[in-house]
Image 1 (cartoon, rainbow, N blue to C red):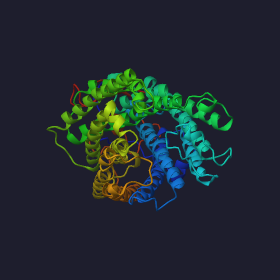
Image 2: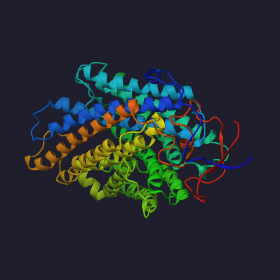
Image 3: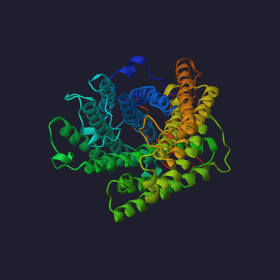
Image 4: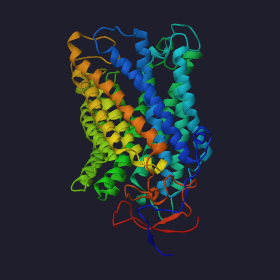
Length: 550
C-alpha cells in the first residue's frame, strides 16, 4: 500500500448530492442533513429568545416597571433563559458536531442514524411545548430556568396543565434527546474512526465533543430525573421537594446543579474544539501542544463533576464543603488555561488572516478570558456570597454563553459554510456582522458587572433610579446585538442561494473533511481513508493518508 498525501486543495471527483428544501423537512438519517436541521431549527429559536431578551431590556431601560406586567416579565425571563439554553445552545452545538464528527474521523455516518434522527425531531417538540405555555391559563413558567421549588411548585390557577408542567415536560424530553445523542456520539467516536486514527490522531474538535458527551452521559440523567420528580410533585402530589410534606427543596438544587454546572463545559468544550481547528488554519501554523490540549479536554470533563455546589454557597452549605468546592472550581482554570496558552502560542508569530471566522474566534477568545477572570472571582466564597443573585453573575454567565459560545458558533458556521453549502459567503457582510456583535455584546453585558457590585438583583423588573445609567447602556447594547443578526441572516440566505461556488477547500485547511467535495457526497468517502501520521502538522508538515476500500 502506497502512502499518498491528502490534497489540501480538496479537489475531488465527487458530485454534489441532489438536495432541495424538502430534504431538510424529512426524517433523514444522513448526519449532514440532521446537522443542518439542528442548526437551522436552533437558530430560529435563538431569534425567539433574542426577542424575549430585547423586551426584557426594554423594560429595564427605565427604573419603573412600565412596559409589561410583572407576571409577563417573570414568564418571559424564564422563557428567555430556557429557550437560549435548551433550544439554541445545546442543539446548535449538537448540530455542528453532527455534521463534522463523522467527516473528521473518516466515517460514513453516525453509529445509530435512526436514533440520531429521532433525537433531532424531539427538539421541535420541546419548542412547541414551551411556546404553547404562553396560551395556557397563568401563562408560561415563572420560576426561572432553574425552577427552584417551592416557587416552581406553586399553582395559583389550580389547572393540571399549566406553564410549569409544560416546562418540566419540555426539559425532560430535551434531556432524553440529549442522552440519546450522547450515546450516539460516544459510540461513533470510539468505534467508527478510520483505520490508523488512534485517539491521539483525532482532531481536537472530536476530542472536545467526546469529552462533552461523556459529561452528558454521566450528568444529564440527574437533571432529567429531577425534572420528572418535580413534575410528579406538581401533578400527582408526591413530596420529593415539598417541605410541607417532608420533602427537601434543596435536594432539587443538587439534582439541578450536578448537571447544570457541568453543562457549561458541555457547551464550552465544543467551542474550545472549534477554536483549536480555526486558529491554526488562519495563522498558517501547526497547533501548539496538540496532545496536552487534547488531554486537557478530558481533565475538564472529569473535574466538572465535582464543582456544582459553588452555585449553592448560600443554600446552607457547611463551611468545609464550601472550601472544598471553591478549590475544585478554581482547579478547572488550570486545564482551561492550558488551552488558552496553546491558542495564543499558535497565533503568536503566525501569518494571521483576519477573515470573518478568525475574527469571531478571536473575539470569542477575548471575551472568554474576561469571563474566566470573573468566573474565578465567583468561585471564591466571599465574593460569591456578596454578589449572589445579582447582575454580576448574569454578566459573567452571558460572557460565557454569548461572548464565547455564540461567537464561537458564528466562527464555526462561517468557517464550514463553504463545506456545508458549496458556496462562499460575502466577506464584507461577515465583518459587519462581527463588529456589530462584538460591540453589542460588550455594551450589553459589561455594565452588568458594576450593576451587580452595586446590588442590583436579577429577575427584578424595577430598580433604584441611581442605577439607570448602566441599565441604559446595557439595553442599547442588547438592541444593537439584536440588529447584528440581520446581516448574518441576509448573508447566509443570499450566499446559500446564489453565492459564489466554493472549491472543496477554500481555506487550504488540513483535515479529512476538506479532502472531499463541498458539499460532501451522501456517504462522505468513496474509500475510507487510512491515517498514517499526526494531525495539524504535528510531527510532519502535512497530514498523510493512504486509502483502501472499506
